[in-house]
Image 1 (tube, rainbow, N blue to C red):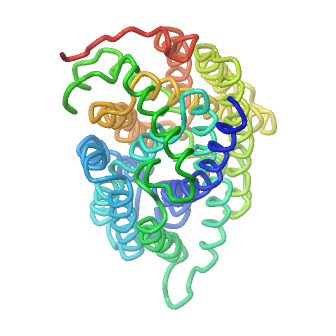
Image 2 (image 1 turned 180 degrees about the vertical axis):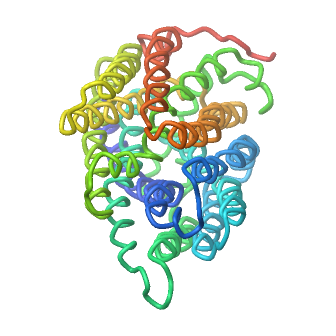
Length: 434
């Protein structure tokens, strides 16, 4: 890119990415803080490991159901208004989690939280694809998903600290955790209305020449994307490549969901450390994950190679996780878990770069991105209850983690087929729906 183009992308990056990262950080904290709340909540509500797994998984059930409709609406009404609506509604529900009294109420609130947040992640991914040309997209995606790992780095210790509010004003620490961490979503949802422009031509912080170049570049790439020619949002369901991408993202989610949801409890079972110390140890792997995501995404953009940047991290993650279950040495097991989590996340920005290069710019693309994300979240519905049941029956998470390891390895093999070496430029349309 020449100096003009570099300057334009630099302005877009500084203006949008930090704010979008903050939004996603808050989203990820609110959906995953149940993993820390469980350290107190399970005993207060009388939850077994399987019951906790059901509660954790129900979020993803309604998230899946409303994912595609939500993104279709976003594409029609604009990201600014719809993302604001999503954030305010999930913030209200997240705060309401503080007042549950029974397992049934936990299940209900997790269902409502999933419905409220549905469409947020694919909506942001679609939004980024409307602002960053394909040659810069993996790097942009890596920054966005760094927010998810930072949510664990920041959120886990923060949640652990909030547990120490136990007894203040007569409320348990886990109730304070839910309430305090739900408030930022409401406040930031209101800020979105004033801060986010829907499209490059609405960006007043770019000059007219920059706005026109960026809008024209994105529109040109969208028109030429192999999977962008479908007419109507429903065409995404007829594209075999969309389903293949969804299957890969499902297998990758075994790691991001299966490990993350149970990591504090896994580490608690391996040591006698306090809850706060456990959350600190649970946060450390995500610092490494942030670094690997950035490096893998940047190198993939520089080389324009996607396949190996997607497959190799997944294959290694599956192998190292399986080894960690056999070593019998606590420090080595922990190191292997750090490597597993980091490598699993490293594939994320490259995956979404591959996906948005194939699907760009149309209503069908918005629904396809949502469909892919919805397929992945099937892991969130089924995996936590299964891992919880395995823990109840065997006294260990090893059986569930072995299942995760197998899924990651299979995902790496699948990546060799669904990712293209040149970032999608040689792809051919699979379902154009003329």
